[in-house]
Each structure stands twice: as C-alpha cells, then as structure tokens.
Image 1 (spheres, helix red, strand yellow):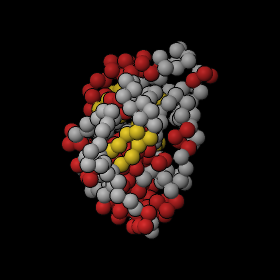
Image 2 (cartoon, one colour):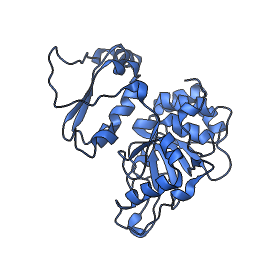
Image 3 (cartoon, rainbow, N blue to C red):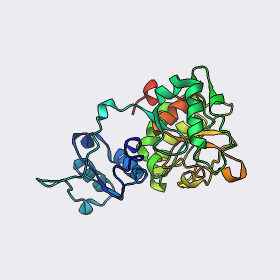
Image 4 (cartoon, rainbow, N blue to C red):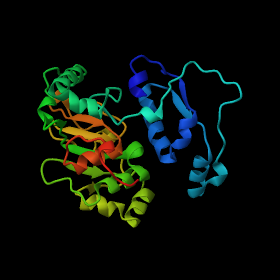
Amino acid sequence: VIGAVFANGYVKNKVMEFVGPGVAGLSADFRIGIDVMTTETTCLSSIWTTDDTIKDFYEVHGRAGEYKKLAPGPVAYYDGMVYVDLSQVKPMIAMPFHPSHVYTIKELNEGGKDLLAEIEEQAVSMLDNKELSLGLADKYYDGKMHCDQGLIAGCSGGLYENLVAAAHILKGKSIGSERFAFSVYPSSHPIYMELMRNGALADLMDAGAVVRSAFCGPCFGAGDTPNNKGFSIRHTTRNFPNREGSKPGKGQIASVALMDARSVAATAANQGALTSATEEEYDE
C-alpha cells in the first residue's frame, strides 16, 4: 500500500479507512502491525472496521466495556479507494531508504547484482553525501542477496504472533556462526513474559537470537547499529538513512530494509540468505 500511494500523494492528509471482507481474515496483531505503518503513506490518520476478533481482543485484555462497533454507514462517500486482493499478496521488501521503495523478495533475488546496483543508485541519490557506497551488489552471491543482520522489533514487528511464528520457523535451526546477527525485541513486557512462559524465547535463543527488553530503539537508530556498509533486514517501522544509527554526513552508512517478521526469521534460518517465509514450512 505504501508503495502504491506514497509517491503520488494519493492519501496525503486524508483518513484511511480499512474495510472489506479481507479485514475479517486478519488477527488483531496483524491489524495493529499494518496500522502502525500507515504514517508512511502520508495519511493524516487511519481507522478500521471492528468485529468479533477485536471484541475478543478487548475481552482478553480485560477491557470488554471499551469495545465499540465501528463500520461505514448505509451510505458512505470516499475520495478514493485502494483495493488490495489479499490472496495475491507476496512477501515484499522495502529497500533503502524509504518504506515505499518496494520489491517482492523473489524479484530482488532474481534481479541479482544489476538490480541491486540500480537500487543503490536510487538510494544514494537521497543522501547528502553522494560519494557514499552501500556495497549492495557485493552482497549478492549463490543466487541470493545476503544480509548482515536481522531484527524484529517495536510496535509493528515485536508483536506476540510475529515472535511466536518466528520461534516456530527457527525451532531446531541455527542462524549460523558467521557474520549474520539476529535480535528480537518484544513490543511490551507482558508479551515478553508470555513468550517466556510458552517457550518461544527459548526456541529463538537456541537458534542464536539475542532477545532484548521491550524497547523501540531500532526504529530510531538506538541499539543494534549495523556495521559500515552493513545490510540489515528488519520488521520495524522506518528505514530512513539515519534511523539505524548511520551518520551519512560523516561518511558512515548502513542500509536497512523492511520485511515481515516471518521472512526475517526465514532469512535467519538460512544464515542470512534472503528468504521469503513462503519458502519455509512451519506451524503458525
């Protein structure tokens, strides 16, 4: 959605309303993860239709009395519509340096060094220092892009369902002992506690993940700063030039790409080789 509407200002300073049959198929966690990212569309705000899934979410959290039914009226007028066929959605990656700079993971891997060189040229054009090199093409070998770091964190990524799925993908596997590093940040202390009780954190740590406290630092460049010319894949909210701790004005730069937590975990299970979650078999 961000890729479709950011550049043309389609929803700029408007309210995005999420409606339609597809919403019912999304859990509360999925809706939260999507909604957090709507800021990057340039919309003013966003609102969702509610249903029994959200009602149950409120009840589980002891706030049943605060639930309200929200839905369009019998007649509703809109400035426009963005239609998303969820059955056609493929795992995607937002390359440096904006969440709208999107490709499918499949086309990025198939595009190889030539596509990565084009992506780097576009990304560097956004920097004040046009002499910097990201070294993206150098990270392509054996038919795939290779990453230096993976993170799942913050209000979009570190949600309960995301980390449980990541634990299932990585259970019994290893992130390897080479260059790739992997960290997870549960988005709240209660989520952290529940993941500890059900064993998900143990599965992640057995695979080589570092589990941090609930903290949104990676979203604004505090914590887990990649090395110079490093390539970090993250399920967080932003991938701006300075967000991961780089200082492009001083000649130091790292590249951050955004992906879904499941594909980040799948990449970690393959020791940093960029991998879509659809390439892995796991139990949700």
